[in-house]
Amino acid sequence: DQSVCAPLPVLGADVTVPLVTGGEVAYAALDYAASAPALQRVWDDVAAYAPYYGSVHRGAGYLSQLSTDLFENSRRTVAGFLDCREGDQVVFTRSTTDSLNLLAAALPAGCRVFVFETEHHASLLPWTNAQVTYLDAPRTPDQAVATLERALADRDPYGPALVCVTGASNVTGELWPVRELAAAAHAHGARIVLDAAQLAPHHPVSVRELDVDWVAFSGHKLYAPFGSGVLAGRADWLREAEPYLAGGGASRRVTRRQDGGVDVEWHESAARHEAGSPNVIGAYAIASACRALTEAGFDSLVARERHLIEKVRAGLAEVPEVRVLSLFGDDAPRVGVISFVVDGWNSSHFAAALSAEYGIGVRDGLFCAHPLVRTLLGSDPQTQGECGAPEAAPGEKSLNAIRVSFGAGTPDEHVERFLAAVA
Ligand code: PMP
Image 1 (tube, rainbow, N blue to C red):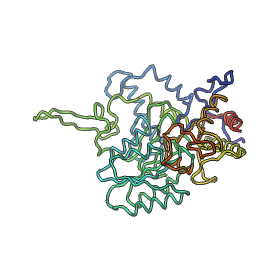
Image 2: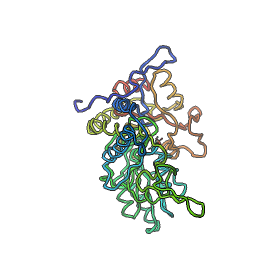
Image 3: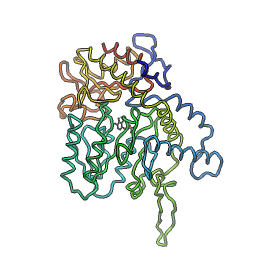
Image 4: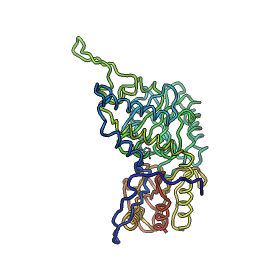
């Protein structure tokens, strides 16, 4: 297909791994949903900048000024990548988990939170200071909107409320009706945060068009290295909250009081939540990845991924023992994240065999989305093991699943090898 572009160059493309059967084989990284390999372009940008980095914000030296510029420009690049509104803030965090915990710490008093049970634990669990309503797994996107509408209609319409929803599931890859959920939230006076950890690497995300209040994502899933993430969106709750990290950089003025205590004036910008020396290289790497994806063009990236998704789904459909997990059905639009179980196989053994005998890296388990995977497997929550590798007795239902995931750097050859190995 002429419209399908070549894979983008990524690190690790030449890595070979030993097989238990002897010899070595090129590693096929098919676990992008956990962490994608870094783009070569990101690595090159970081390598070019690394000799020049210095402390940001307070240094008078030339390299400190350069680093401050690159750090603040990275913020602007991310704001452009997310199509943020005038006045939105971009806070650099450690990860999606960190971003959502930051927002959870910034909720106004009395805030109610609404979250589907199908969410990744990063979206499901941070709301420990709020009264949380967990919504049942919907079976269609329309049902998701109707479920949310009903729950919001039942609450006190004058209190603050937040909806947290994923853009693309880390288990099924299915896209959620974010724009419709945002409209429902706003119609009921609630706000919405989009967990774009799995969406942003695969699709353009426009804060403005989706009309979400915040968006969170991780650098290491967006072809940048570990250790940096983003929370972007409305400034008001963030500006009014206590600093997520208290310390230097977040404080504008600290004075000793007559009574011996200390008064602090905190910044109102993103720096309020970024105390300490920030991860400048991480922020720069995220910005580089944003630029690289934008330049490659999401139209061709999406086309390439669709081609891979169709190939994988068609290949898996030919193996009678394979059951692909889905909440919204076969026709639902999705990203390159596909989970399945294989009749007669323990998923963990199956994934281990793909690695040891074929050099293919996938993931097995419950994918930090325990309630969703249990719903999809139709298993009894009371009899489940821990996250990891619970054993299914022979002939019994699987207790966990196998996940294959891919993206902009995946060559056709990797998914072909994967399908041959599964067959
Ligand atoms: N949300 C979703 C949908 C995810 O897939 C993940 C990572 N698996 C996270 C949040 C958490 O991301 P991180 O581990 O980078 O904090």
